[in-house]
Length: 203
Picture 1 (tube, rainbow, N blue to C red):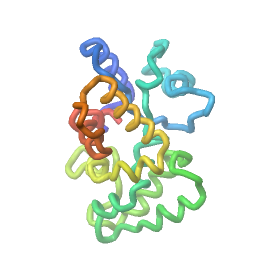
Picture 2: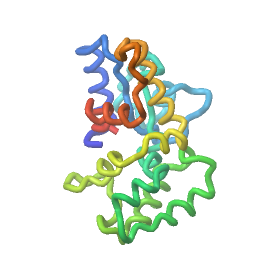
Picture 3: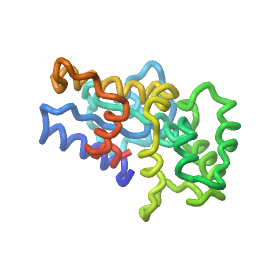
Picture 4: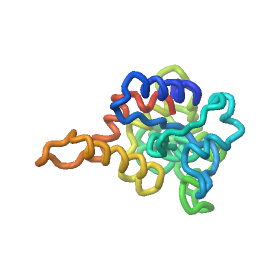
């Protein structure tokens, strides 16, 4: 959230070089609908708007290393109305979001522009004021909402979120990071791990 797509990609490549044994992922917004015929890297490779930071790279990484908050991170926010209500409190108008969602089958179909319109309209008269993803002063709305999200609720609403959490849990098991008698990590533990490792910094 405090960096560009180019920043995220450069940090991803640096992590591959400095920590080659780790499971490094790029987590960004897709910014547009994803074709079912394309994997994540192909989506980026074929987007004209992303060519400036790809700079001719082949993007021949494993598909599991690129994940999207489809089409924008606000998709995850509107999936969990309780988290929004918890942060914005009095004056939050959730019907501005729920009414709009009636026109879509799932949150991943909603464009970034529409998501922003919904959130600004729903929060305009709330205790924290209108939603602003770009603010750099406390409270940083996007960070505060992200901390409050119920991962299970978002996973049920977003196949791409479910894909991310499933892959991370698979990697934890494959790498033997759990003791034989230790249960698999919960969604909340995975979310906390993402925050601790800084994955939220470059969304």
